[in-house]
Image 1: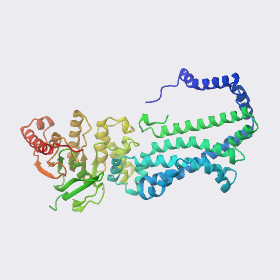
Image 2: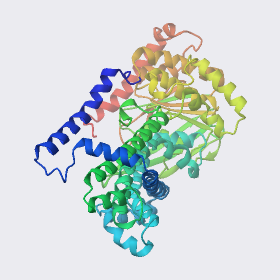
Image 3: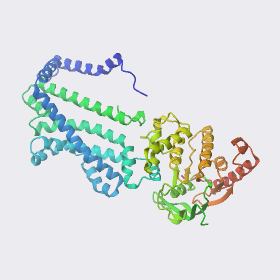
Image 4: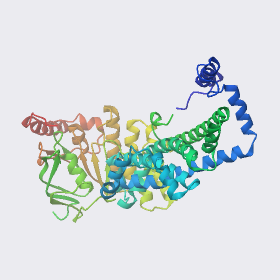
Length: 260
Length: 263
């Protein structure tokens, strides 16, 4: 029922891929296969990270990026989930949004950043809207499929027990689609960090993306990688919290459907 | 006729399967009195489940009409409880919350919801399982919860769609007796769709045999067995065997009349 207990050996085996990754990095940097100026060895990145960790402004940048990612994500959910749900229950709404979704599905949303800069200027607004746009479609598509796939007999059962049609969405559709919606949240969460960083590189005065861009421009690759490592760690923690939360809320669901 | 609890009058239904019109039901007539237990048996694909779903108000009729207490069926209603073969429990709700569902929809005070739900949980022998989710239950347990969920909010009519179809033979017999016990205590009007002739004869006051598609009722058997006798006495009795054979033969004729089973 529950996952196997985390023994020290299991912990080690989980860390192994990371250790091997760092060893390969170190070997690559030391061997001269890649110019060490462009690929700083692990210990230099680590010391840069310690250095960054000592400065207050680094945490401000992390918080700014985190806020933009989550702000855009929340907006994307607030707009995308209702659109997806509406499309699943109403042919008229599906007829309106369906073609738009299909047409824009493969468009890289980062391509819109230059336009967003024109409309919203440099700063958080552009960043948040860019994240919102890129997380919108996962929410729309997964919510749509989650609700469209709700077994008919669940709806019929609820109707037979007195649930009126206008309350079906709350009483049956959304609860039954929880799994799909949490999956979309996890996918969108990944997008949100990617887009927040990318947008900050070209359209912000603050944030980890901007910091990475400045360090990259000035050739301080050890600091650039340190900033990357910090945001990777932050995104990882956010992902684990999302998975933990969804597995807690979806404990009624089949184990094999849980997020990993 | 006006005394009928449920009246089905000349009901027809046609479906569109990939551009091909398929006639599911052709002028079905059926009249059921209050407190009667009627089973509908027939070859697979004869439209018996369609008929039940129409009585449930989930599917509209093409022509003819269906009346409950003299009023036409226009949609689902809490006067008609439905139990499906696939149980249709809400997987995100516990056993308790599933059984309490219809009671809460009726705006019953939460204290009474608790008492009623607990009574039914005890009745189906699932005390201690209140906080379990459907996925943690066996097929038989799920079906008991589905029955209890429907009985709990006290619909006058029960519509059962192969309610024991997914159970093993032993569990099925236990559940059948449980259903008889629950029905006996509450005097329900029941319509059950099944492909199991033994089940139909054992449980029903009347068995209707439907024809191959397009379905209509071709034969009716009134079952007059001693309801106070236990299962062994009933099943081993001459009366049971002869009526069972007669029903089986009637269904058999419908199957052999149309040996080519279309999908």
